[in-house]
Image (tube, rainbow, N blue to C red; front, side, top):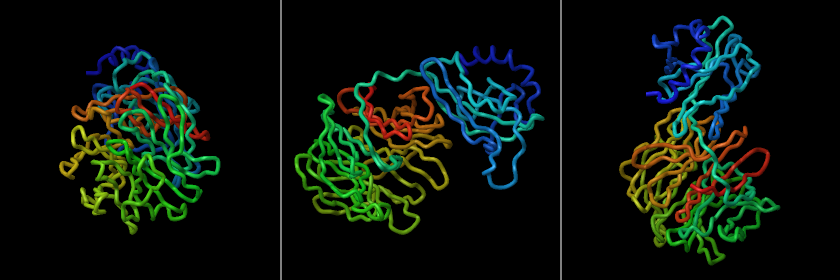
Length: 429
């Protein structure tokens, strides 16, 4: 059922009826819906992106051959068509927009229902109406960003994609976050959510050092984090370090050399991703006993690259972002003992990264580029129902690293609009 989309499509079809009758019949079903298959490619589509607020979706694209594209020049683009579905990323698409002016690179779509996930695809055609290319689907819904509770700049000098550089204390009062000072030295800072003040926790003073993911222990007395003493060997020599929150003596805890993304099973045991110095360097999930130093493999599956595990002690599960070779990242669930490793998301078109459990263990918040750029989404761990969390029409903004507060109903995220440094934002969930 296409719900309110059908009503909207009727009005649009009246306008575009003649245009659709002239469309290449090889990609239309008898019902007039666009049919996509595995042979559809994004030829002559350089970009396709969607933004939304509570009333409209704004879509941007760049179509046409580029002089930088390798190989023979594809046919000239003469027609651009936009299709929408609320059935799924591959089914039920109907045309809602057409332009013969290839210079037009955006349009605004209204009359869409709230609380509905929509899927958009772009098709480009020759002036003679022969299909050239079809985009991958975008996924987006309507909604309004909540009023910011708190925001500050949080400069960092590393890409956040494979890291999770924030962690809430179990009481929800403090957020640990990696930032750099004026000398570009990375350290962990503690932000007090009530006083909105910050103080450094670590005191590294070498700009060559690099910090990755971090996590509070279950009782909040310790922090585990990733650290490499040198920028030049950052990708091949980093370990899990731990320290007491009320102390100033961090120390390496794992054996290295490619250990990252710590989480906690208990005050004595950490989960982390262990890679290898030699190719293909596919990380596996390991547990580390802090008392004995013993490291135990939880996974032995060299088909999946594993990143940013998040532990839920409420339901004894780990969620992580996993990527099979030459495919996009999905979210995976696995038990604390390494059993029942199964995918939670199934989209083959998008990157689902940086998952984090809600305090009650029901929702998993994550960042995804399913709208063409990164927004924050949440998925019900039991039912698989997925909803968009952050919204906005400002082009070029990415929102990353969601961290739900375990107590007070806030979610911390990083908002990035280059060339400005990231901004930490706390929003009501």
